[in-house]
Image 1 (cartoon, helix red, strand yellow):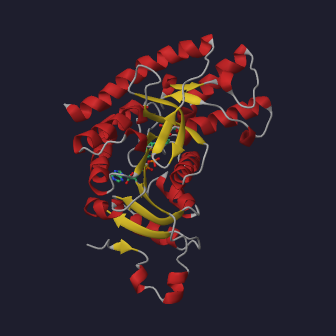
Image 2 (image 1 turned 90 degrees about the vertical axis):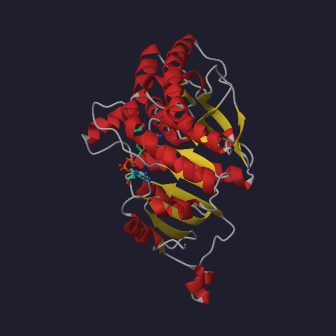
Image 3 (image 1 turned 135 degrees about the vertical axis):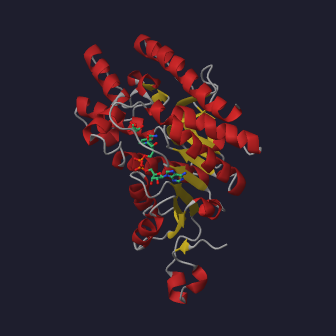
Length: 338
Ligand code: NAD
Ligand code: LMR
Protein backbone atom coordinates (compact mmCIF):
# COMPACT_ATOMS: atom_id res chain seq x y z
CA UNK A 1 0.00 0.00 0.00
CA UNK A 2 1.53 3.34 -0.96
CA UNK A 3 1.44 5.82 1.93
CA UNK A 4 -1.67 7.96 1.59
CA UNK A 5 0.13 11.15 2.49
CA UNK A 6 3.17 10.77 0.30
CA UNK A 7 3.86 14.32 -0.76
CA UNK A 8 6.19 13.73 -3.70
CA UNK A 9 5.95 10.46 -5.55
CA UNK A 10 8.90 10.63 -7.99
CA UNK A 11 6.89 8.71 -10.62
CA UNK A 12 4.39 11.57 -10.81
CA UNK A 13 6.97 14.37 -10.96
CA UNK A 14 7.95 16.10 -14.17
CA UNK A 15 11.55 15.44 -15.31
CA UNK A 16 12.66 18.86 -14.09
CA UNK A 17 11.02 18.27 -10.72
CA UNK A 18 12.81 14.92 -10.53
CA UNK A 19 16.11 16.64 -11.22
CA UNK A 20 15.29 19.10 -8.44
CA UNK A 21 14.84 16.22 -6.00
CA UNK A 22 18.50 16.39 -5.05
CA UNK A 23 20.30 14.57 -2.25
CA UNK A 24 19.54 11.18 -3.82
CA UNK A 25 22.61 9.63 -2.22
CA UNK A 26 21.74 10.82 1.27
CA UNK A 27 20.16 8.99 4.19
CA UNK A 28 16.55 8.09 4.88
CA UNK A 29 15.32 9.40 8.20
CA UNK A 30 12.00 8.90 10.00
CA UNK A 31 10.65 11.00 12.86
CA UNK A 32 8.01 9.23 15.00
CA UNK A 33 5.94 11.81 16.87
CA UNK A 34 6.65 14.34 14.14
CA UNK A 35 3.60 16.54 14.78
CA UNK A 36 4.51 17.23 18.40
CA UNK A 37 6.29 20.03 20.19
CA UNK A 38 9.70 18.49 19.49
CA UNK A 39 8.68 16.72 16.29
CA UNK A 40 7.75 19.83 14.31
CA UNK A 41 10.92 21.89 14.80
CA UNK A 42 12.95 18.68 14.48
CA UNK A 43 11.27 18.00 11.12
CA UNK A 44 12.27 21.50 10.04
CA UNK A 45 15.88 21.00 11.12
CA UNK A 46 16.18 17.55 9.50
CA UNK A 47 14.70 18.94 6.25
CA UNK A 48 17.61 21.43 6.35
CA UNK A 49 20.23 18.69 6.82
CA UNK A 50 22.08 18.06 3.53
CA UNK A 51 22.81 14.44 4.56
CA UNK A 52 19.09 13.61 4.46
CA UNK A 53 17.55 12.56 1.12
CA UNK A 54 14.22 11.24 2.39
CA UNK A 55 12.36 12.42 5.49
CA UNK A 56 9.38 10.42 6.77
CA UNK A 57 7.10 12.19 9.25
CA UNK A 58 4.90 9.85 11.32
CA UNK A 59 2.40 10.67 14.03
CA UNK A 60 -1.05 9.60 15.17
CA UNK A 61 -2.39 13.14 14.54
CA UNK A 62 -1.75 16.16 12.31
CA UNK A 63 0.96 14.84 9.99
CA UNK A 64 -0.77 16.01 6.78
CA UNK A 65 -0.40 19.67 7.78
CA UNK A 66 3.14 19.38 9.12
CA UNK A 67 4.21 17.42 6.03
CA UNK A 68 2.65 19.86 3.56
CA UNK A 69 4.27 22.75 5.40
CA UNK A 70 7.80 21.31 5.74
CA UNK A 71 7.76 19.85 2.22
CA UNK A 72 7.67 23.36 0.71
CA UNK A 73 11.18 24.14 2.00
CA UNK A 74 13.56 24.26 -0.98
CA UNK A 75 16.11 21.83 0.43
CA UNK A 76 17.11 18.42 -0.92
CA UNK A 77 15.14 15.99 1.25
CA UNK A 78 11.90 14.53 -0.10
CA UNK A 79 9.27 14.68 2.65
CA UNK A 80 6.52 12.11 3.11
CA UNK A 81 3.84 12.08 5.80
CA UNK A 82 2.26 9.06 7.51
CA UNK A 83 -0.80 9.21 9.74
CA UNK A 84 -1.93 6.60 12.23
CA UNK A 85 -0.77 3.15 13.20
CA UNK A 86 -1.89 1.57 9.92
CA UNK A 87 0.81 3.65 8.18
CA UNK A 88 3.61 2.96 10.66
CA UNK A 89 5.13 0.16 8.59
CA UNK A 90 5.28 2.30 5.43
CA UNK A 91 6.82 5.10 7.49
CA UNK A 92 9.60 2.81 8.72
CA UNK A 93 10.43 0.65 5.72
CA UNK A 94 13.89 1.39 4.33
CA UNK A 95 14.92 3.91 7.00
CA UNK A 96 18.59 4.38 7.98
CA UNK A 97 17.83 6.46 11.09
CA UNK A 98 14.66 6.59 13.20
CA UNK A 99 14.24 9.44 15.70
CA UNK A 100 11.55 8.98 18.37
CA UNK A 101 10.11 11.99 20.19
CA UNK A 102 6.63 10.36 20.50
CA UNK A 103 4.88 10.46 23.84
CA UNK A 104 3.50 12.74 26.52
CA UNK A 105 5.62 15.48 28.14
CA UNK A 106 5.75 16.51 31.82
CA UNK A 107 3.62 19.11 33.57
CA UNK A 108 4.82 21.00 36.68
CA UNK A 109 5.13 18.72 39.70
CA UNK A 110 5.71 15.56 37.65
CA UNK A 111 8.88 13.52 37.39
CA UNK A 112 9.93 11.93 34.11
CA UNK A 113 9.11 8.57 35.66
CA UNK A 114 5.46 9.72 35.96
CA UNK A 115 5.37 9.50 32.13
CA UNK A 116 6.24 5.79 32.16
CA UNK A 117 2.61 4.60 32.26
CA UNK A 118 1.77 6.15 28.89
CA UNK A 119 5.11 6.36 27.12
CA UNK A 120 6.29 2.79 27.85
CA UNK A 121 3.48 1.38 25.70
CA UNK A 122 4.07 3.92 22.92
CA UNK A 123 7.79 3.07 22.79
CA UNK A 124 7.02 -0.66 22.79
CA UNK A 125 4.67 -0.32 19.78
CA UNK A 126 7.09 1.84 17.81
CA UNK A 127 10.02 -0.46 18.62
CA UNK A 128 8.03 -3.47 17.40
CA UNK A 129 7.51 -1.61 14.13
CA UNK A 130 11.23 -0.90 13.83
CA UNK A 131 12.13 -4.54 14.53
CA UNK A 132 9.79 -5.60 11.74
CA UNK A 133 10.41 -2.95 9.09
CA UNK A 134 13.91 -1.49 9.52
CA UNK A 135 15.81 -3.72 11.98
CA UNK A 136 19.17 -2.30 10.88
CA UNK A 137 18.27 1.35 11.40
CA UNK A 138 20.01 3.48 14.00
CA UNK A 139 17.45 4.48 16.65
CA UNK A 140 17.63 7.81 18.51
CA UNK A 141 15.25 7.53 21.47
CA UNK A 142 14.02 10.81 22.98
CA UNK A 143 10.72 9.78 24.67
CA UNK A 144 10.88 9.96 28.47
CA UNK A 145 11.76 8.46 30.83
CA UNK A 146 14.82 7.73 28.64
CA UNK A 147 16.38 5.75 31.53
CA UNK A 148 13.54 3.22 31.10
CA UNK A 149 12.47 3.61 27.45
CA UNK A 150 15.91 2.59 26.12
CA UNK A 151 15.79 -0.70 28.10
CA UNK A 152 12.20 -1.19 26.83
CA UNK A 153 13.30 -0.83 23.20
CA UNK A 154 16.26 -3.15 23.82
CA UNK A 155 13.97 -5.85 25.23
CA UNK A 156 11.56 -5.52 22.29
CA UNK A 157 14.45 -5.88 19.84
CA UNK A 158 15.83 -8.88 21.79
CA UNK A 159 12.43 -10.58 21.64
CA UNK A 160 12.31 -9.98 17.89
CA UNK A 161 15.89 -11.24 17.47
CA UNK A 162 17.05 -7.95 15.95
CA UNK A 163 18.87 -6.34 18.88
CA UNK A 164 22.15 -4.66 18.06
CA UNK A 165 23.22 -2.63 21.12
CA UNK A 166 25.37 -0.34 18.96
CA UNK A 167 22.31 0.88 17.08
CA UNK A 168 20.10 1.88 20.01
CA UNK A 169 20.98 5.29 21.39
CA UNK A 170 19.18 7.23 24.13
CA UNK A 171 19.37 10.96 23.39
CA UNK A 172 21.03 12.88 26.25
CA UNK A 173 22.40 15.65 24.05
CA UNK A 174 20.15 18.26 25.66
CA UNK A 175 22.00 17.74 28.94
CA UNK A 176 25.29 18.45 27.17
CA UNK A 177 23.81 21.44 25.31
CA UNK A 178 22.57 22.89 28.61
CA UNK A 179 25.83 22.13 30.40
CA UNK A 180 27.82 23.87 27.65
CA UNK A 181 25.52 26.91 27.86
CA UNK A 182 25.53 27.23 31.67
CA UNK A 183 29.28 26.62 31.99
CA UNK A 184 30.00 29.16 29.25
CA UNK A 185 27.86 31.71 31.12
CA UNK A 186 29.90 31.19 34.30
CA UNK A 187 33.21 31.35 32.42
CA UNK A 188 32.12 34.30 30.28
CA UNK A 189 33.00 32.54 27.01
CA UNK A 190 31.21 31.49 23.83
CA UNK A 191 29.21 28.24 24.48
CA UNK A 192 30.38 26.88 21.13
CA UNK A 193 33.90 26.73 22.52
CA UNK A 194 32.91 24.68 25.58
CA UNK A 195 32.49 20.93 25.84
CA UNK A 196 31.12 19.39 29.04
CA UNK A 197 30.82 15.61 29.26
CA UNK A 198 27.53 14.62 30.91
CA UNK A 199 27.27 10.96 31.92
CA UNK A 200 24.83 8.63 33.70
CA UNK A 201 21.26 8.98 32.51
CA UNK A 202 18.57 11.55 31.75
CA UNK A 203 16.66 12.38 34.95
CA UNK A 204 17.54 14.36 38.08
CA UNK A 205 20.56 12.98 39.93
CA UNK A 206 21.27 10.49 37.14
CA UNK A 207 22.37 13.48 35.03
CA UNK A 208 26.02 13.76 36.05
CA UNK A 209 28.05 16.60 34.54
CA UNK A 210 31.80 15.99 34.77
CA UNK A 211 32.92 19.54 35.45
CA UNK A 212 36.47 18.33 36.15
CA UNK A 213 36.71 17.26 32.50
CA UNK A 214 35.45 20.44 30.81
CA UNK A 215 37.24 21.37 27.61
CA UNK A 216 39.03 23.73 27.39
CA UNK A 217 40.45 22.94 30.83
CA UNK A 218 39.19 25.30 33.55
CA UNK A 219 38.46 25.26 37.26
CA UNK A 220 35.41 26.17 39.34
CA UNK A 221 34.88 27.18 42.96
CA UNK A 222 32.85 24.72 45.10
CA UNK A 223 29.91 27.18 44.91
CA UNK A 224 30.12 27.21 41.12
CA UNK A 225 30.24 23.41 41.02
CA UNK A 226 27.10 23.19 43.21
CA UNK A 227 25.27 25.81 41.18
CA UNK A 228 26.20 24.28 37.80
CA UNK A 229 25.48 20.68 38.81
CA UNK A 230 22.09 21.63 40.22
CA UNK A 231 21.15 23.76 37.20
CA UNK A 232 22.20 21.08 34.69
CA UNK A 233 20.36 18.34 36.60
CA UNK A 234 17.21 20.45 36.82
CA UNK A 235 17.32 22.18 33.42
CA UNK A 236 14.32 20.20 32.23
CA UNK A 237 12.29 21.16 35.31
CA UNK A 238 13.28 24.82 34.83
CA UNK A 239 11.61 24.72 31.38
CA UNK A 240 8.59 22.68 32.57
CA UNK A 241 7.92 25.27 35.30
CA UNK A 242 8.43 28.24 32.97
CA UNK A 243 5.98 26.71 30.47
CA UNK A 244 3.52 26.32 33.36
CA UNK A 245 1.54 23.35 32.08
CA UNK A 246 2.14 23.87 28.34
CA UNK A 247 4.75 21.10 28.10
CA UNK A 248 8.50 20.68 28.42
CA UNK A 249 11.55 21.65 26.38
CA UNK A 250 10.76 21.43 22.67
CA UNK A 251 12.89 23.98 20.82
CA UNK A 252 16.20 23.36 22.61
CA UNK A 253 15.37 19.63 22.43
CA UNK A 254 14.77 19.76 18.68
CA UNK A 255 18.11 21.58 18.34
CA UNK A 256 19.83 18.92 20.48
CA UNK A 257 18.14 16.04 18.63
CA UNK A 258 19.12 17.50 15.26
CA UNK A 259 22.70 17.90 16.46
CA UNK A 260 22.82 14.28 17.65
CA UNK A 261 21.10 12.92 14.52
CA UNK A 262 23.58 14.81 12.36
CA UNK A 263 26.45 13.22 14.32
CA UNK A 264 24.87 9.76 13.80
CA UNK A 265 24.52 10.42 10.05
CA UNK A 266 28.12 11.62 9.77
CA UNK A 267 29.13 8.43 11.58
CA UNK A 268 27.05 6.35 9.16
CA UNK A 269 28.78 8.13 6.27
CA UNK A 270 32.11 7.00 7.69
CA UNK A 271 33.44 10.31 9.04
CA UNK A 272 36.20 9.84 11.62
CA UNK A 273 36.28 11.13 15.19
CA UNK A 274 32.54 11.69 15.79
CA UNK A 275 32.13 11.64 19.57
CA UNK A 276 28.92 12.45 21.49
CA UNK A 277 27.44 11.51 24.86
CA UNK A 278 24.58 8.98 24.69
CA UNK A 279 22.69 6.53 26.92
CA UNK A 280 23.65 3.13 25.53
CA UNK A 281 24.25 -0.51 26.46
CA UNK A 282 27.52 -0.28 28.33
CA UNK A 283 30.08 -2.02 30.50
CA UNK A 284 31.51 1.19 31.91
CA UNK A 285 29.70 0.59 35.24
CA UNK A 286 27.91 -2.44 36.71
CA UNK A 287 24.69 -1.23 35.03
CA UNK A 288 23.57 -2.62 31.66
CA UNK A 289 22.99 0.91 30.30
CA UNK A 290 24.85 4.12 31.00
CA UNK A 291 25.50 7.42 29.24
CA UNK A 292 29.09 8.26 28.41
CA UNK A 293 30.97 9.59 25.43
CA UNK A 294 30.63 7.22 22.48
CA UNK A 295 32.31 7.20 19.07
CA UNK A 296 29.75 7.08 16.28
CA UNK A 297 30.53 5.19 13.09
CA UNK A 298 29.00 3.11 10.32
CA UNK A 299 27.76 0.55 12.88
CA UNK A 300 26.37 3.12 15.34
CA UNK A 301 28.03 3.48 18.77
CA UNK A 302 31.23 1.68 17.77
CA UNK A 303 33.28 2.59 20.82
CA UNK A 304 32.20 3.44 24.35
CA UNK A 305 34.65 5.57 26.25
CA UNK A 306 35.38 5.09 29.95
CA UNK A 307 34.43 7.72 32.52
CA UNK A 308 37.95 9.09 32.91
CA UNK A 309 39.27 10.40 36.22
CA UNK A 310 36.52 11.62 38.60
CA UNK A 311 37.00 13.86 41.62
CA UNK A 312 35.43 13.12 45.01
CA UNK A 313 32.31 15.22 44.28
CA UNK A 314 31.75 13.37 41.02
CA UNK A 315 32.34 9.94 42.61
CA UNK A 316 29.62 10.71 45.19
CA UNK A 317 27.33 11.86 42.37
CA UNK A 318 28.07 8.67 40.45
CA UNK A 319 26.98 6.52 43.38
CA UNK A 320 23.65 8.34 43.62
CA UNK A 321 23.16 8.16 39.86
CA UNK A 322 23.80 4.41 39.76
CA UNK A 323 21.28 3.72 42.54
CA UNK A 324 18.46 5.55 40.76
CA UNK A 325 19.42 4.33 37.30
CA UNK A 326 19.37 0.68 38.39
CA UNK A 327 15.69 1.00 39.39
CA UNK A 328 14.68 2.84 36.19
CA UNK A 329 16.46 0.32 33.97
CA UNK A 330 14.89 -2.61 35.82
CA UNK A 331 11.44 -1.01 35.49
CA UNK A 332 11.86 -0.82 31.72
CA UNK A 333 13.20 -4.36 31.38
CA UNK A 334 10.41 -5.92 33.44
CA UNK A 335 7.73 -3.97 31.51
CA UNK A 336 8.54 -6.16 28.50
CA UNK A 337 9.67 -9.36 30.24
CA UNK A 338 6.73 -9.72 32.66
P1 NAD B 1 4.14 16.58 22.53
O1 NAD B 1 2.96 16.09 23.28
O2 NAD B 1 4.17 18.00 22.09
O3 NAD B 1 4.36 15.69 21.23
C1 NAD B 1 4.35 14.31 21.28
C2 NAD B 1 3.83 13.77 19.97
O4 NAD B 1 3.83 12.35 20.05
C3 NAD B 1 2.36 14.20 19.67
O5 NAD B 1 2.27 14.80 18.41
C4 NAD B 1 1.60 12.90 19.74
O6 NAD B 1 0.51 12.84 18.83
C5 NAD B 1 2.67 11.91 19.37
N1 NAD B 1 2.34 10.54 19.75
C6 NAD B 1 1.66 10.10 20.81
N2 NAD B 1 1.51 8.77 20.74
C7 NAD B 1 2.11 8.36 19.61
C8 NAD B 1 2.29 7.11 18.97
N3 NAD B 1 1.81 5.99 19.50
N4 NAD B 1 2.96 7.08 17.80
C9 NAD B 1 3.45 8.21 17.27
N5 NAD B 1 3.32 9.43 17.81
C10 NAD B 1 2.63 9.49 18.96
O7 NAD B 1 5.44 16.24 23.41
P2 NAD B 1 6.93 16.77 23.19
O8 NAD B 1 7.13 18.02 23.94
O9 NAD B 1 7.26 16.72 21.74
O10 NAD B 1 7.76 15.62 23.97
C11 NAD B 1 7.78 14.31 23.50
C12 NAD B 1 8.57 13.41 24.44
O11 NAD B 1 9.93 13.78 24.49
C13 NAD B 1 8.09 13.45 25.90
O12 NAD B 1 8.07 12.14 26.42
C14 NAD B 1 9.14 14.28 26.58
O13 NAD B 1 9.23 14.01 27.96
C15 NAD B 1 10.37 13.85 25.84
N6 NAD B 1 11.54 14.74 25.93
C16 NAD B 1 12.76 14.17 26.03
C17 NAD B 1 13.89 14.95 26.09
C18 NAD B 1 15.26 14.34 26.17
O14 NAD B 1 16.22 15.05 26.46
N7 NAD B 1 15.43 13.06 25.87
C19 NAD B 1 13.76 16.36 26.06
C20 NAD B 1 12.50 16.91 25.95
C21 NAD B 1 11.38 16.09 25.89
C1 LMR C 1 14.24 17.77 29.42
O1 LMR C 1 15.30 17.48 29.98
O2 LMR C 1 13.97 18.95 29.10
C2 LMR C 1 13.27 16.68 29.06
O3 LMR C 1 13.65 15.47 29.61
C3 LMR C 1 11.85 17.04 29.36
C4 LMR C 1 11.54 17.07 30.82
O4 LMR C 1 10.54 16.47 31.21
O5 LMR C 1 12.26 17.72 31.57
